[in-house]
Each structure stands twice: as structure tokens, then as C-alpha cells.
Amino acid sequence: MTAVARIAPAPSSAPSATELMALAHSRAVDDRQRLLLGVLSLCETNPPEGLSPVLEEIFLTLARQAERDMRQVLSTRLAVADWAPAALVHMLALDEVEIARPVIAGSPLLKDDDLIRLLVEASLEHQVEVARRPRLSGRVSDVIIERGEPATLTALAGNSTADVSVEGMRRLVDHSRRIAALRLPLTRHPRMNEALATQMYMWVGSALRQAIGERFEVDETRLAAAVEEAATAVIPGHPKGAVTGEPLNAERDEMERRLVDKLHASGQLRAGFLVRAAREKRLSLFRHALATLSGFTVSEVDAALRHDSPEALYCACVSVGIDRAVFPALIHEIRQLNGGLPGHAGGEVWNRGPAMPAPAAQRAFRTLLRAPGKAAV
View 1 (tube, rainbow, N blue to C red):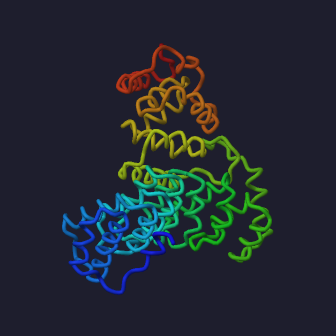
View 2 (cartoon, rainbow, N blue to C red):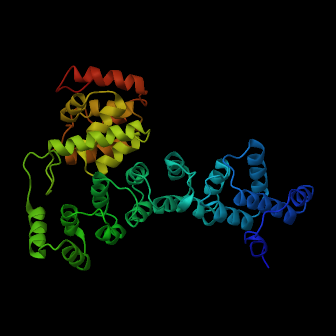
View 3 (cartoon, rainbow, N blue to C red):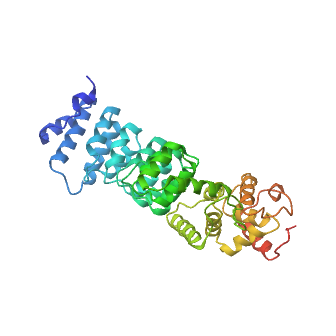
């Protein structure tokens, strides 16, 4: 018989103080586990309004010494307890995923910052459990969407109780272009609307097209026509310079700016976001993110994007922490989105000389903008 089989059920009554004292004097593993469960049962019988520091330390000390089966029991029984020691819940949430799952799914002591920490520090399996958490907040959903990990995005798309904003749904639909696993849960998602379903119709298979048509009671012939139109319509002068059915406009640009501001305020905006924005062919998002991270104005960033040399853009990117080894792929993406600009004057500036420190890159950027249309020497 395993340890869990012997100790998992909650006792019908809490142990007496005498029984707990006797267990506390024992060094036997089974007695230490019985002591931990005894203290747990005592708290469950008479939930405290707040645990004393001494009792919290007892919980943590015993839990650290507990075997795997015991930690599994703790996680299950503390999953919805609002009186539990927060440090113990956090420890269990970072334990192996089978142990962590109950507290990640249900503990009221795991706040948004704790869940975001799991998304950043824990394993992919833990991140998936966060995305599945019932009634997930919009703030955590935004971080999941921003990170763009296929497994967690798919789990979020299947979480019908999560708070996902209109912009978040749009980005999930965008991600479904490359992540086929997102498509089925998105067609069933309660926040899916006809406009997004019509957009997704363009890259799903026949079965999901039928499901979209049935759910939204729309004419599949009309949707098929939209596919054909999107495949052939080239919008002249569009900054992406690509085939698209979604022209850039002031409303969309404002949405991108607000998203960048929100990510920046929460500490989630980093240099890697710029690379991801370019890869996702979102030039407006790249512009606002680079301006926010660098402290330059959007107009200055736009001037660098229109320059006949890539050097100003290179300096701006270096100033926010983008490695020069990454820049060649980045400038390739940007030129595809921006009608071939920045131009090629000055050659491959990223291959010249030693790496440039961020303060020097900031100064060089402003110097270059004072001489528009010329490559720096």
C-alpha cells in the first residue's frame, strides 16, 4: 500500500494537541507525514483567518521534507483553501506538473503576478496548466498571447471561461494561420464573432468552414468569395507591400499603440517583441514598440524606416538590446513589409566594426536623422 493510500483521506476529526506533540517528537518519515496531515486537518476543521508565522514555517518545513505522494496530497487538499500559507502554495505550484496542477487550477492565493511568473519561469507543462485555469484574467491571457507559445495558445483557446479581449481574440485568430491546433477550439469559442470567423475561414479546411458557416448562419458562397478577393487584392501604397484583405487604418494603429502601452506598463515589453512583430508582419506594432522601448518618437522611428540607409534603424534596434547578429533577418522582414525600405545605401552596416553600446547607438541614431537621405560614414 502506498503512502497516499494510507494518508490521503481527510480524517473525520482533527487530532488532539497531545497526538500532534507526540508526532512532533518523532523523526520517522511516516510520523512526519502524519504530523503534516494532522496540522492540515486541524486548519481544515477550524480554518484560521490568518496563519501565524510559526505555523506557516511548520507547514513549509514539513512540506519540504515530504515525499512526492505527500506533496500530491497537499496540493489536492490545499487547491481551494484561502487560509493556506501562500509560500507553500507557491512552492507546490512550481513542483512537478502532476503535483502543481490542482493548485494552479484552483488556488485563490495565486494572483495574476504569480501566474505570470509561472508563464516566465516554469516548464511548458506548467504554462499550459495556467492557460487552462478557470476564469483566467484578461491580464494573464494577454501575456499568454504575447508570448506566442503554440501549446499555451491552444490551451487558452480551449478555455471558454478565460477573459480574452477583442484584440486578444484577433491575435489568436492571426496565430491560427500558423498553428493549426488553434482552429477548432476557436471556431467553438464563445467570444468568436462573425468578422473574425470570416477571416479565419480563409485558411481552415472544409470541415471547419462548414462549422463556421453553421454557427454564424452566414452564406458560405459569400465567404468563399472573400477568400478569392483576399487572394487577389493588392492594396497600392500599403506599408506591408503584401497581399492582404485588411488595410492599415487609424483605428488599427491606435489599437497597436494601446497594446504596446499595456505591455510596457506591465513590464512585458522587451526587445524580442520587436522581432516577433516583424515576423508576424505587423509593421505598425513594430513602430510603436520600438518607439516605446527606445524613447524615440514614432515620427523618428518612421524616419528611420524611410531612410535610404539601414543604419538609423540598426542604431535604434541596438539601443533597445537587439543583437546585431539578429538584425540581418529583422531588416529583411522590415523591407518586405515596407516597400523595400530602409534602402541599401551604406551596405551591411551591422558587419562594420565592433558591437555598439546602447548609449552610443542612441546618439548615432539622432545624428543620422539630422542628415536625412544620407548614409552615415
